[in-house]
Amino acid sequence: MKMMKLVYPMAFVLALTLATTGCRNHKPYGVTPIPNGPGGQVGDIGSGGTMGGNLPGGGQQASLSGFDNYNEDRAALANYTIHFAFDSAAIREKEQANLQAVASALSSDPSTKLTIEGNCDERGTEEYNRALGERRALAARQALAKMGIDPARVRTISYGKDKPVDAGHDESAWSQNRRDDFVLLHPKTGA
Image 1 (cartoon, rainbow, N blue to C red):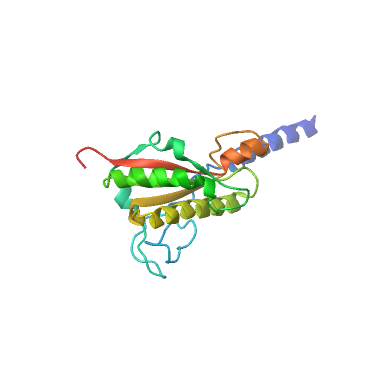
Image 2: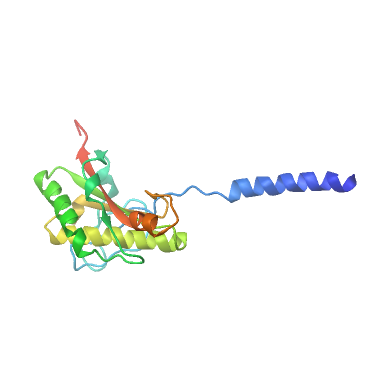
């Protein structure tokens, strides 16, 4: 009987500890500081916070405050998602048409901006996938810059493995989750 009096409080404390520390909110890694052109250096991965100013290797970082007065339009570019090979941030040739369509949409309306969301499949650690998602988003941003899109109009976010489109645990699902999503940003009315 005395043993049971000890077991229940210990089980309660263990359950409470697991409930409060076992689950974390998954938040995006932060907006990526990116150079103003293909030749500059990329800042620290996932530094988050408000950014702006020059990078050590030259180029301009996208400022978070420059994206405040915009509404997200997820549907506009939803058909132009690009996908990646396993453990790669290289943009495949077959994805070039989707990137060109995104560049055309941005070119047709200079008041719009873009968010590129880098994503990974479930394999790998959270830290590794955040960094890989960021490299994927940076690769798309650099490709758009080569197509004539001002990098100051583009921000990147890495979600790592936190936002799968397919919850499966096989190659079919994983191949759909290794992607960059493009979110068109329109200025808010009166902004």
